[in-house]
Image 1 (cartoon, one colour):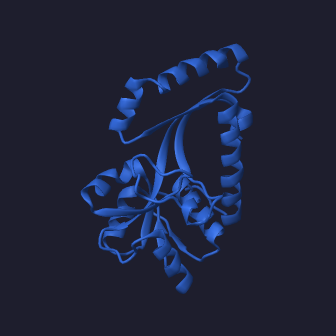
Image 2 (cartoon, helix red, strand yellow; image 1 turned 90 degrees about the horizontal axis):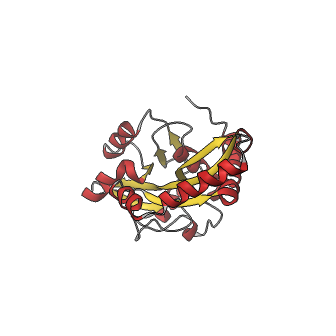
Length: 214
């Protein structure tokens, strides 16, 4: 349990999670994909970079939210999943933005939805899944700072000040932007509350779907 084994310091970076299809796919939107799943249960096949990762879990949460039967296709990494997508073997891939940013910029892949509550700054024209009516849905990947459990309040305060200052600095924001990463600084009690919500939401999805890490 991250809330008992560690002391949350600061979330630093969010990675938008994006559903993508090939540029010439007949699926033009997330609504198209869900309509396909409704018309023919199980026919929509979605892959991610690996079993048990945030995009796989996020896909299982989407299945629960929509009540639709869609098929998860496991791969051992992003490259084989994208190759299968480009080869026409699967319907879509759910990936973090950084992994597929090159294909998006070249136009090889086309984004149809992001999993976050708000539109991604890197993809401002791409709708969110909550915009489709699934208002409780939220899936993001992130990097944050955790300290060992029982770290003193004084040390935690120093760490929060250090990482908050760095994460909000213009230099760090510029370097993150160059890597297609979105700075998202959330510290102390707010970060703990965010982790708690994610732990509960994704933990339930893992249990309900019986997801096992490989």
